[in-house]
Image (cartoon, rainbow, N blue to C red):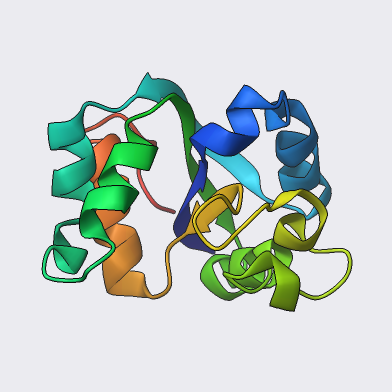
Length: 140
């Protein structure tokens, strides 16, 4: 079993898509180990996306991510990181495969409805950022 971090972004929560995305997560065989609804502060968004601090889109990204409610999730299943990324689809919804979440719900590269960890070290950081300490069950 593997764990990954997933997020339902402010564009999707504002359009009432959280339930549909959560249903898809469960249909894909993920176990939801942790879930929170947060309204990120600008500082929280900057900390979470610190790896992108020097990129030209950093300011717009952190402003967007602190603009509304976000659902943060700790997910588990076999091959969780790769599978969640496949379910989400390409970052740009225009390039996402039919049937993926981003193809169905994404509006743009920034407003693409979901986020997911891209590697085990990223998942560990992201899970720890939103689910610190003993908030999640011990790994089995």
